[in-house]
Length: 116
Length: 116
DNA sequence: AACCATACCTTGCGTAGCAAGACTTGCATA
DNA sequence: TATGCAAGTCTTGCTACGCAAGGTATGGTT
Image 1 (tube, helix red, strand yellow):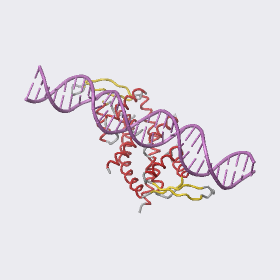
Image 2 (cartoon, chains in turn red, blue, yellow, green):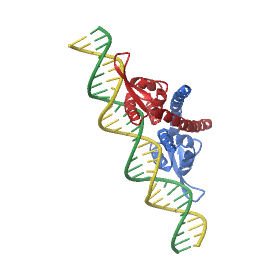
Image 3 (cartoon, chains in turn purple, orange, green, cyan):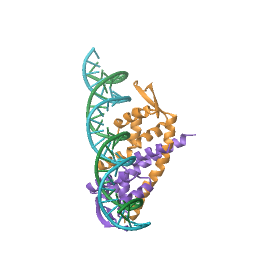
Image 4 (spheres, protein in one colour):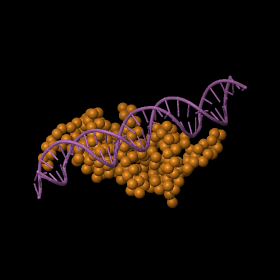
């Protein structure tokens, strides 16, 4: 049952995760695991296995940049910063997301109303 | 530019379309093209190339059933009905959708606030 | 020295939407 | 009667993404 819900969530995340990363970085630089924890808490990703390949892609397409910095734990951390291009993409996404999510919510609402 | 938006929309649709079909069928039986037109108008799908394979899958997994009926134009139409199983899945989806879409909207909102 | 947690990354897989186009059949028009 | 058009349905090949599982390196703790 909650197995089913995980499958549903996984499919929703496709194509949304990338912009959630950008939106999160817009409020401050973060390193890999930090991002993973935040997005996992929000149920927006399942773990690092999704994030690291995505971050590599985003760096390759110029949505983010990276730099190394010594962390509080003494370990080196790779921090991610959003670029101007990244900011623009978040704007694009916001428009599309608002339109589509409204339609989905609308459709679900209709059915809810008809159900006894 | 709007090319970019199409790409974004395409990715959001993955995993959402299936449940939009179910929600639409919950308010009455429909045939293939009719569904395609409604969902295209709502920007929830790009066309029949996505729908027909999806409907076939959904029939195979017992989410919908089908019957043939003579249409107003004299042509035969394949009508789709939602099953009990389908209704249950819409319920599951609604829960997941509400949780995730709220998180996404929340993240986008934060960034909006910080942007001057 | 041994161990564990932190932090990064890779490989292989399944799946879903899409573009483009093929096939069938009823209706209209010349 | 033949031709063309539109309504319907379905198929093929493609690409992309999230995920599970596992691999590597390093610094702190006992």
